Image (cartoon, rainbow, N blue to C red; front, side, top):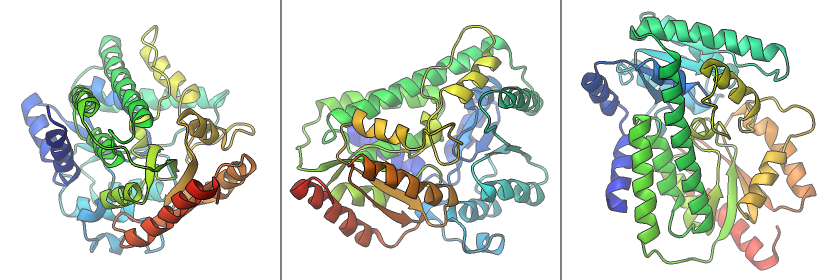
Length: 385
């Protein structure tokens, strides 16, 4: 399978705001689909119920917000407003329900609004625990048990331990192959452009997990055989874009500004679990334990002790990055509140960094490109900024 055909398919999925793939999957499998907002939901539980988990990340730069602005004030991020736009336009009708995980107050409010706007659709707000030692464990286990009962009712299927283990195994394999993709990009970034990695990750929101794993493996085989030229670029980690996603043109702009992006937090739900979830014992307990102890550091998750920024520093060193680019959506309180703390730690460690804000439909790509280009040139010339 050629790279371009894989990329073209991912672009089609990226632009598939009507969820035609989801409609076809439901018809083919005589099953249902459940949407979820980023950053994290237990997709394994949805898949074990015979349903298709579908990541909803707003309308991107393909959607003009008209009706959505009537439901939310203008001084919040764009993703809830564009998601409402998609809902009101009927583009999410293929979904038999929506999960809203605890990301921020805006997403919490969106879940309540969704219940009012679409009373016939299953809606659940997942108030994820922020205590990872005692009460949080029992709280999350109870939350998952309630979700499991709801999914069984919606799907008409019993979620057995065997089905759940199979689902966990499928997502473990998918996370493993995505990590291989990220490691390959860090090793030979000229052969694995970030805009293609981004499209592959966005495809994971839509595709059946097993189909996505096959697609990523096919891409890596093709990428290793490609003859793309090496360019003199600076290796950077992009941080802060964990919820509202940047438009594809912005990702391409960062690359063409002289940066090899060797790691990022885009489409974080596909990479949230850092280790394989155990297939031994009680699979529900395995899901709880993985969330409590083996998940990535992000602005929407409380950090125990004095660990803020350590994950980012470890990532910079692991990927041999020369600097960090903070890319946060406009009005994203979690990312923008966390940024000064991370910047202070990077400065103390002598790691160059810069930052900007964007929106799904940002029109300032050229300005951002010039800023990151200057950042890259400064590192090349002086090793710092």
